Image (cartoon, rainbow, N blue to C red):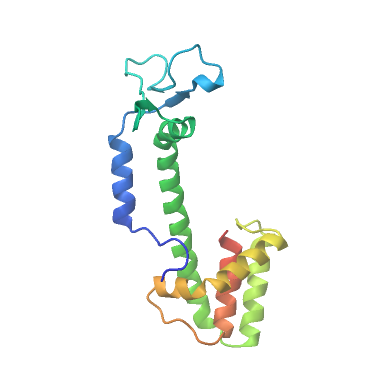
Length: 185
């Protein structure tokens, strides 16, 4: 049983990206009759006002024959073409940050073997925050929320990195959890 959504592979992300690129071009804009239309059908304008690209009309096949798609479906179809590339870029950005933090944390984790090492690691985190380094969770409430989520999710994180799941917390585990809480939402 998998807790939470599974991690998409790079091949799956690439397939999503190819589907986006193969779809009709951007921009798309949804014109809904329920939002002040002129008595025609709701549709999706493709390519903007100055383009010769045909508009998109979406229907559903129901018991009574073809009927227009819902406003929610039209909105989703219209804006998915613009939104999905942004989401893919964000997934890749976050993975790169996670990989970098993981590499950094692995390096630091090897050095955190005692209470004194952990204290130094915490001082380093504080110095990074005060120096203006980008933290996703730069207030105490969001930091503590991320810390709790990271500790709860640590078995999945170690499994994703092909590392054994720790049975007991260690100084290095705590150092990794503190660093990860500064980076992850």
